[in-house]
Length: 598
Image 1 (spheres, rainbow, N blue to C red):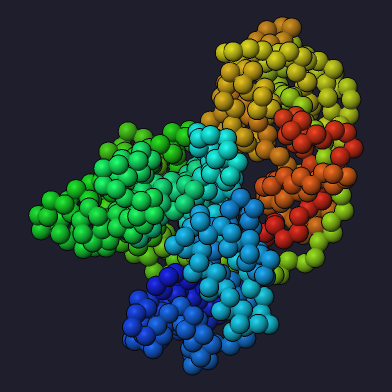
Image 2 (cartoon, rainbow, N blue to C red):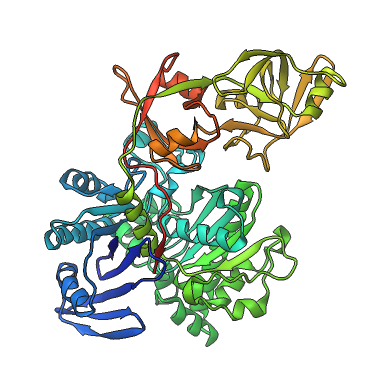
């Protein structure tokens, strides 16, 4: 499969061609930039050949229309699909989507959330549909990666009517963050699901993303790409009171203020240039405004790194990417200096000698530092091509109903916990068998105690585990007075401690979680449904008057497992789900790995 990928902006077009499923094959990369006065600059490269110059294309539409001729001149043919970067997908586009008139209308309705980005993205799609009318066109959304963010990270404390109208935090650069985090995990040699990583994308647009155990947990951008870090022309975080102040003091309209925050702020406002290279040169020559701009920029990034390390309860790696993150050794040092207290320390020689050819991801932390520091080039087009190919090559899956079970509060005990709670040599008494083979509910019960209250007669599920795990609902965690994290079963690092009471004693342990919704499934059924362990799927609840979809449901493939979806009591109560409920997979959401060579 050969995928053509477009990343369109108002003044530039970047595109590339990628081959799926082959170890070594040709890749083409091209760009048209700085549209003005009926022309633009271009650069094309493939197979060691590199060309640059001026082209007679004065806007985005003309540039896209010229792409078939460019590819033909370079011997690139047999395109089978077109992938597009779409900046804002709102709350509904959780995965790549096929683009048609209905989908484009839904994306266009999101334009107020990304007024500088979505219009150009949509223009590129419409032109590409006219140029390649017979090819599938798919969109990959910057916001989709961040839809795993919990409500506490996405909710603004504003009136309910505003929130009901769609005011919430989304986050952007998701395709970049996803790629560099997975590349960093590969470099570290551990699964991304076992790591806590902060991805720092520093370019003309800039954002920081906290990725906890494989999922985006928070991102510095918010409702729009304006929130967060200082950027080339964007302000980043600003007190919302500035709107009223500027209206009263300077007579500015909302439109004028918003336009200035997007286009005349950031480095451009502080130092007179949006290019960090220019700003660093001016600062070195003694320009006080440029020096201030650099200090403000670095301080904001450092503050977010510290905040996200605290929010995740730990940190394994910081990954720098984007034009500034990849190329400015001095900015990386300014950001990292002062973070030694949390185990992050640079090797200054390695930091100065970063080489990024062939998708390298060098580690530049000092010897013995607990937190790794990695630099790597982002590869958004490659990631888009991967996701497009994954969707198009997936076989049509079986989609029979999946039973939905409501998982009430329960504990899984270790042998040590059983002896502490019930006495030395005690063996739990198996009671009711569960649908998962080999699992059962014990006849015994325990009490769970937190700083605010207790949960009495909590069920014990067997068999015993290596580590005690306590699974509660979000409401239960408030009753206990403890912030229990949403985790996949078994991922207990950094979880809060609670006290268990039994007839023979007490047992203090960590392991308190709100279990993430998941589907137990056996290997054969998983293969028939086109699923792999660790996939995330959307599940639509079936039956009369349901119309409810559970997003980001984890697939857990286990030998001999009975296919069944587990949700907690809060989710069941909110959805009105009781016994004998079932769901079906929403088509086209789960993704599987596809090898692509740039």
